[in-house]
Image 1: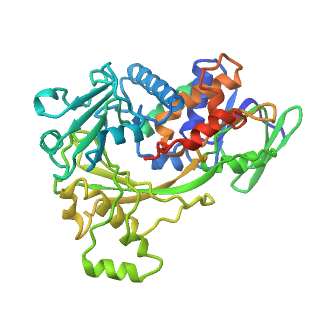
Image 2 (image 1 turned 180 degrees about the horizontal axis):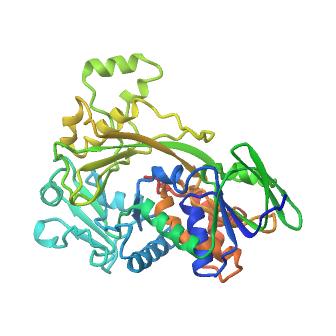
Image 3 (image 1 turned 90 degrees about the vertical axis):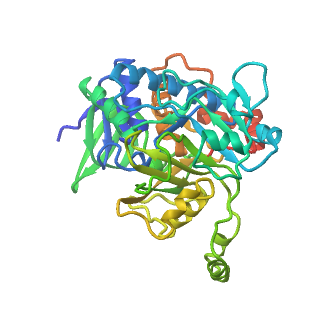
Length: 452
């Protein structure tokens, strides 16, 4: 039987693999490419995306990387007629703390003389509207202080919020549409899509990839491989003898129709950064404390609960999430979700937006509980680039930021594969960073990893 041959095989049809194929085919004119995945494109981890983006990261390397990815998304938005509905209402980090200087340091913001960070304490000093238009929205950060101003700008927020850090170059996208647009462009240039599961990889002068589809096995040959297998990136790398410092954490979200109109459609992606103690009544709290497995629900939990309108100005849905799970888990094709999660995240989100308490007695019929894996490194940075096996490249460990990072990750992977000039951050985002003792010590000392 003839063995199909390709110059490049990409393992994984999630957003990172698709973006790699897009930049290889569109910018570097490499069309002899096959993408292999047992599932439909964008249907596993990429389908569980929060579909948000932000330029705030607690390290300059990640800020440069994600800022460039936002630049690339804007380019595609212009070229495509904004097919993926890019908006920019920002990220609002809310806290009940009055200690702004301490928070500025924790969040890695700095007081400065330029206009990148602006301070406001009354409504007359805060004129910028919260517009969805990414072309006109400001960059930088607005710091809003005082409950009166905050209630004026964000009317659904709790009265006890004292400070808001409004990150302006941030918003949401339809990541499925972005991925499908890039895939359509790549396929129009000749990129093939093979629905099959990778069973093994043999390598020498070329790679032989043993795949199976509906019980039939086949060998596909390739000169180069890009491992973009998402939560299975470490498993695929093991097939060529490479051990990656990557683990998976299952994170969940809920979405439902806000039938009671508790949240203004103009509210930005809003994150309660304070540690949270959920508001159970006394009887519920005592029952939880008496149960060894559930007692943690009656104690303070790390913050970063988030909520945002979903579906645009004329939509009616909300998305809620809380990435409090820190337990590594082996990835499964059918993730097992926590039945208690919807009530947990609802009670957590209601601390910032008390109107959500109206759903304590039950969610609307239009409701969705879903979850996906965060494949991540300890420092929560991606791994993109070459490996010790010649011709074998990786693009992954994109944690919860795959949608916002996909364009820059795909472009960077294409630059490695084509041996093009690399950006300054390339080495720091590759396996080579683990040989940089200074950088690794710096990352170890960071008090935040940008996990939201």
